[in-house]
Length: 440
View 1 (tube, one colour):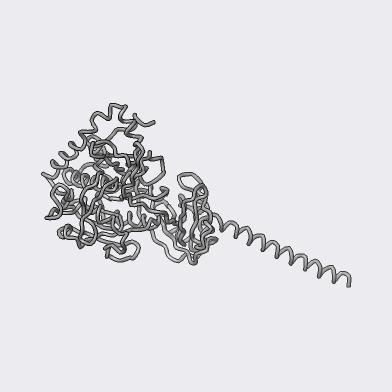
View 2 (cartoon, rainbow, N blue to C red):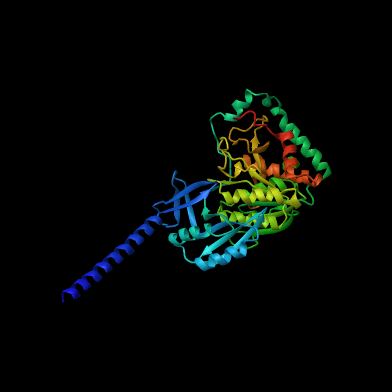
């Protein structure tokens, strides 16, 4: 009888220990669900639950910037490893859908949708994927705040203006606007951009606008709604139409010749993307690649540059246009700050990053600046197309980037053999401010 009681007590104790272990594992997993980690440019990024009722909202651990998570992960893989990685993933995690974007140079990106939206399953999927052969890195699919770079007034003196005023580089700046205008006129005597494919990735485009009635529209696609209709869908959908006007709008009774589009005969590929999901931006760049784009305009930026976006843009700049490189044009931003390495899309050195000049030919007070800035273009307000067949003022580095996009289209139409590096050299000669010896 004594042995039986001891045996029962032992079994009860063992059961309690198992229960405690299960509780401990559950507690640890639950705690881990409050945080998520991934690597970006070799640095560990920690996301913490924001306290919001929405369980998908997190914040960067070292700031108050919020991001939203989906049930997707982004995997960078070596070209040719897609099938092996996909098969291995399906054996270990619950895969719902899988799409591959690229290749961008020697790599491509696999966007994997998971069954369910549990933070624990997302964390587990990241851990599984990063250990697979052929995988270079893995990140969660993030939605960040996306800025369309409308002008933000700043009262403080622009730091670059002060630096340049003490440097010899400032002497030629007042003449840059004149030189840019003359260069534009010379190019337009030869071409209006015919044969060049321009991709504009932005919010809604009012393609029913009278000024676009003769535009050569090659392709339209709304990344979020999965339809060809890219017309504005809300009152906030107004940036893309303005950007488009700087490049494509034809002069009419309401739009004088001097503010008409720069490359009106180029072909347009309009991609409507109002949200900055990593997966959406990769898909937009993938479409640009498939369309064999010559120039890609992205007049916006996010809070934090994510490595997949830089890698995709680097790949386009390396292999686009039959190896001569696609020109990805990005606005420098309107905060009046120096652009730090790997900070936003404007820090991508393979892109053509455009800063804004004021009416005096100096870097505008609001324009960001730094070594990644490839060119300086007019950024003061001008009359452009607006949605609902209207016209309005537009300025800032978004305007400057759109202007730069038009100039590049003209240049490529006139000299199609130019590489990315040669285009940037020509832009620097006409509009640039050489910063390498000015800014430490």
